[in-house]
Length: 295
Image (cartoon, rainbow, N blue to C red):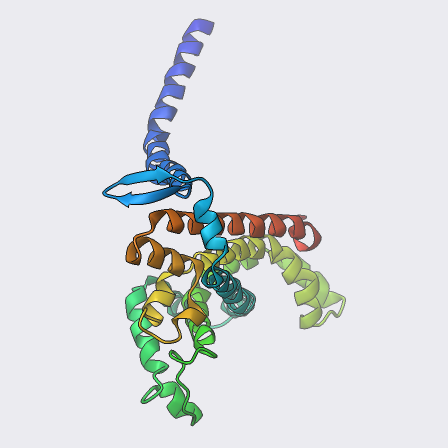
């Protein structure tokens, strides 16, 4: 009997391995192995036609000595500062409105989520028209004449507005799921005690939704550090304000595919991965002070 059970358990285990094999193979082929190649390439000089020459840490020394690299690093951090806090706040407010007792909640959820399913190129084209300094609707409404996409002082803010608008619906849906898991008994008890809506928000809603908020914050920070497509489509390489908005991934693209320096581009990628790792560690250390996992 034990042998039969062992054979059945082995067959079940083999079927389990077979089921997860496509995912594991895809992970190794599409993620792990390319990352290992990127690490190796970051220590090499690209000779063309797939040939590389090992040159140690020279790529890193060259990258760290360039003011453009540190400007791109700051642009990436600045983009995170502009988009993540404001985006999380607005997403939470939208989630709370969608969680309220209002008519047509399904329609409004669809409207807020719609930007996530729009093609980034289409989004960029619409917003470039809105931000146009000559005939843009934003200048017409505000009665000003600002070159939002070509002025180095405001171009990052313009791109941040587009990023927040694009992601607010997705983040709000995730936060809405967290809000709906909060038991109504908490609010009923607070109403009996005479607590105001503001007090209920800070003492019930915010602590109870903090785990979901923490996950959304991690996702949004990682996405903001890796931002490329939005900036590339909003601010092309010929734009005079490109240096004011160029992120690390934007610089990686220019080094790897425009300048043809694959080694330097790989070094920039590894630096970005380390930056994401550092931010993630800080988040997980800091979440102990504000994330509440008690039910």
